[in-house]
Length: 139
Image (cartoon, rainbow, N blue to C red; front, side, top):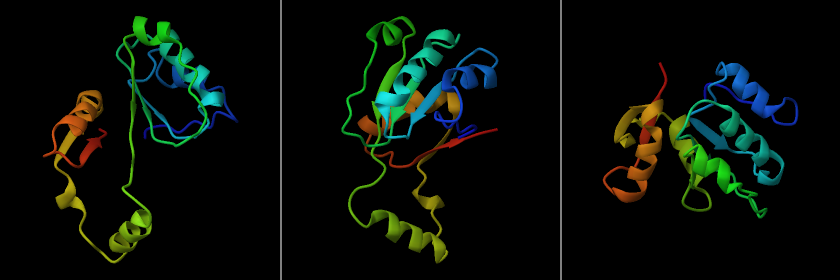
């Protein structure tokens, strides 16, 4: 991530618009697990920003429902996708241990893309089983 914003310490939508010069973000990563607390600010940043076709990726798990305002996503042509970062119990400790012992993880990368290509490649990860690890490169 280029920027991390703590929505409990800063006004999320104002900060996004400030960082981007009023454009808004192309990609939002909801990693708080508190959609009932942060979703309105994500929608406000999408609505007030100039960028269309933003993507919100939900990676944090929560039992709370997301209060989506359809008008924001329809008018701004934004989308919401979910992402599961692991495949079972014990995955993270095993991967961290392997990396710590020097295992080269680069062969797992099947494709490298720039930030503007992330939304279409998220779709590709769901539809093309030959892609398993797409990495976003920041300039």
